[in-house]
Image (cartoon, rainbow, N blue to C red):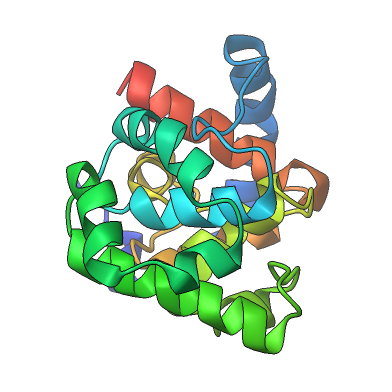
Length: 203
């Protein structure tokens, strides 16, 4: 019996077939996870930006525990910029990698004040200029805080996209563009949330 070839290695991948699988998968995910949404707690774009930075290599549940008091102490970009870096590190320590995250949060807040009039920017090109913000974090903010179609490629989305043969790529940027081609744009954000929930709940 001939062995199946790995599309990632052969370069052969049928996007039309992958789009067909999305059309089959979508109703099942909608039925299973009708209330899908982001697990991080936030009340404004700045809080979501900070929470997403903190969530790197950390569970959303732990981030939510930390930010419950954190967002009462640091309300504005000015609060983060004025704070002593060591104090920020201490406040976010349970989230891990606290030095790098503190530097990123303070740096992002400083740039938001200097370049964006104190408001979290609303475009991908602007968001990725903030320290500590890559496409994954930017998409999270765009899709959830600003209601823009966005594809968030976290560990679950990457793993399940390959398992469901939606893309041969594990690189999050390549996968993002693959999913953008086969998932209807209006469904981008919720499709990713449902994949994430399915990954956490089932596999």
